[in-house]
Amino acid sequence: MFAEYGPASVLEVADVPEPHAGPGQIRVAVRASGVAPHDCALRAGLFRDVMPIRLPHVPGVDAAGVVDEVGAGVTDVRPGDAVFGIVDLADPGQLGGAGAEYAVLSAWAPKPDALSWEQAGGAAANVETATRALDRLKVDTGTTLLIEGAAGGVGTVAVQLAVARGATVIGTASAHNHEFLVGLGAEPTTYGPGLGERVRAMTAQGVDLALDCVGSGSLPDLVDLAGGPDRVVTIADMNAAEYGVHLTRSAGPAADPQALEGLVTAVTLARQGRFTVPIAAAFTLENAAEAHRLSETGHARGKIVLTH
Ligand SMILES: NC(=O)c1ccc[n+]([C@@H]2O[C@H](COP(=O)([O-])OP(=O)(O)OC[C@H]3O[C@@H](n4cnc5c(N)ncnc54)[C@H](OP(=O)(O)O)[C@@H]3O)[C@@H](O)[C@H]2O)c1
Image 1: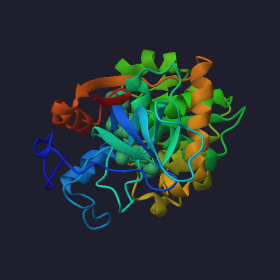
Image 2: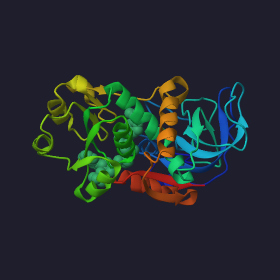
Image 3: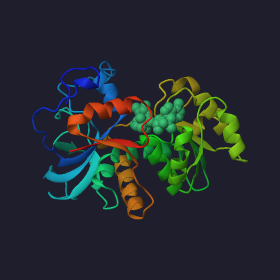
Image 4: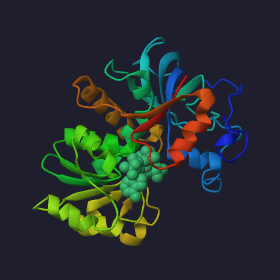
């Protein structure tokens, strides 16, 4: 948790009041939780004006664990079940966060045996985000999709979910991550100057759609390649409106039925051996500051997780 905004060193392991499951929620004894750029930005105080949080705050929006409390109206799980899912940070009844001994989930699915605790713990938020973006783009069989930032937490999930929909995926990453992207089912290329020429050389028909998972300023190139701003979605570029591009944001797991649909799809694909969560690195809770520092490099390959 952190009691004040600041650098990664403000993170500490400390006692906080136990959260409890409200109606439609469950509580899990957490086995692993995800670390994301959003957690670092929140900790650094970058969102203090737009998303005020109560301090102390427990960071983390997704987790996997064993159900130990079931809220009113929940009928699909029982104490003892292994699940993974999403915390609703906007829930005023909670101190936050997945990076704790217990976490309250607002959307969940059964943990498939095919995913380890670490993989399941870092899966849910990125599955929700990637599903929301791919749905918005209407990615389907026969689509050629360009994913900017394909080697990151969201990108690795988006590549696999798009391939499972029958899309051809071109993904950008640093050269040392290209073989890794091939393993996920994408055709790799590097990002940065000359992207348009490189992508056009890879595909005779051009790309139909583009998903920006980075926010590095490449939207004009993506719009040009895909053939219009309505064919591009970003999850990370705050200047999207300037280019007529849609910036997708989560409405929160409780408000968003897609969150659950995405998790169920990921479970099915994982059981079929068609979906995994590449782990960039796993840290203990005591070393959460190191996990945040790695995230802040902007070059983690796959998902950073905490083991509990
Ligand atoms: N709107 C939403 O709902 C939503 C949800 C989740 C995340 N986000 C945002 O989406 C962004 C990505 O999140 P994430 O968790 O995927 O981050 P991440 O895991 O930290 O992303 C790291 C990856 O970004 C790649 N990368 C760095 N600079 C790049 C560039 N200029 N072009 C292409 N790739 C580049 C790196 O690839 P190389 O190492 O190969 O260079 C690395 O694999 C963050 O800004 C996050 O806050 C938004």
